[in-house]
Length: 152
Image (cartoon, rainbow, N blue to C red; front, side, top):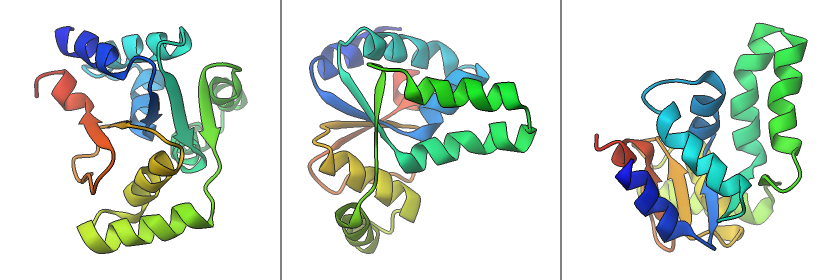
């Protein structure tokens, strides 16, 4: 996992926005991604960097638990986001939506991706971790895909 270790060194002490797919891979133990996201979340939990996500990412992650109609699964996933000191969940505000619209207009990024991007910028993040290949950096934020951590 040399690329993951290198990433963790680069993001040390920084604010890092984590997109929904990282959480989904972690919760579902989806391979080959699970092995790459575990050390990222361990480093976040240990305080090596400040993990940030948005309400929209939480909503994306909650789709599967709600679809399963399994109360214990719903509670388990909600508890991940409410754990003190793990990941800060940021509410999206009007400025985030406005910047998201600008990002979408300039890059043709999907609106949900643009909202994540705008929220990350507004939260002072320097990095955005995702696996959405349509994500386009429009300035000020480095987008890192999980596939790049796996050498794909």
